[in-house]
Image (cartoon, rainbow over all chains, first blue to last red; front, side, top):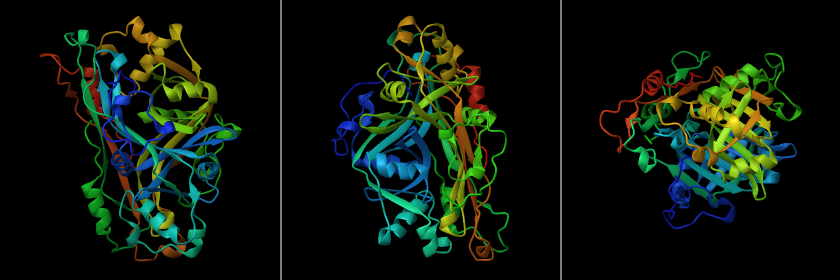
Length: 232
Length: 232
């Protein structure tokens, strides 16, 4: 993920940037349009949440959901990274890896990827906002919420949910071929890309599933339609 | 990624743990064996590197490589997250997402995944260690190093490479079915998993590739053999 990158103006108006979310390397690949950020948040099945703790930096993978321009995360009430984030602020990083970029020189090897970064300080939510937030997280990957039993009051109390506005954000995207040095283009070395695709497979019944309970259509069709990352 | 998790003894002897890498939630899924940590580092095509900056926590995706129990990362000399990590210390997080876990109650929805966390303070490397380190990063995904031209002295100078011992580390793995409440098992709701698989596709020639240059066997066979995450 570190070839020589084109330096140039970012595409689109800077609508989601701040001083600390300004992309510092490979600025030609930066994109501050909110729609670019949201598209990557929606495409990534999980995020990595980075926080600062008394023991140093920490990043852990978390499921996430989104309603409009609010990001939702959830976990157990004692979840270490969520609780630390309420104090330290967070960096939520959403990455979709699209492929390997093989250049004529290893120096220009790279990856094709889409990455969005959202910074801010989450707030704990309770009350009426909690149920739709949990539904957004649950349905971020698959529209499975409606098929099961509703959560109980006790289950809601036993879940920590935080919200953060998607305001300070940036996206960085690399697509396409390697960018080799001009003098290498006539060399005998192969150059190209190897695409990486992620695909949801057919649903598998739980071993303890009773007889005659079919996969809900929403889950069956989600898995058929699949999540396929784009060829980079 | 936050269902009710089995609490129990971790498997294997604690050989890679420290106070700050002790898993605090879902301790039954924690694994401190070095071999478990290394297997996840090897299976993840990229990592997320978390650091602490003057502007707050930051995590960005990076390519990585490994020789024995040393982790290598590289980037441009001004790479923000690598340079911050030399000061603040880092948390390198390696995640492979294996599937969606659909429970009878959304409260027990989860993901199947493999995650390793390595903490420490990297050191900048130069001299004789640099070339093998770059090769390890370059070949972490595909054995493509030997097919191209060798890096020049100038290219080596223009690359920042850091090394970190894989000493303070832990792994956390979730596999298998949802863990529903006993009283829900007779309900009418479907439960199961939806596996997620990542696959490398056939290599694509760069548009500026000259005639009669074939895909190197090492890259062709890598893409054929593919990277397939295990069904969770």
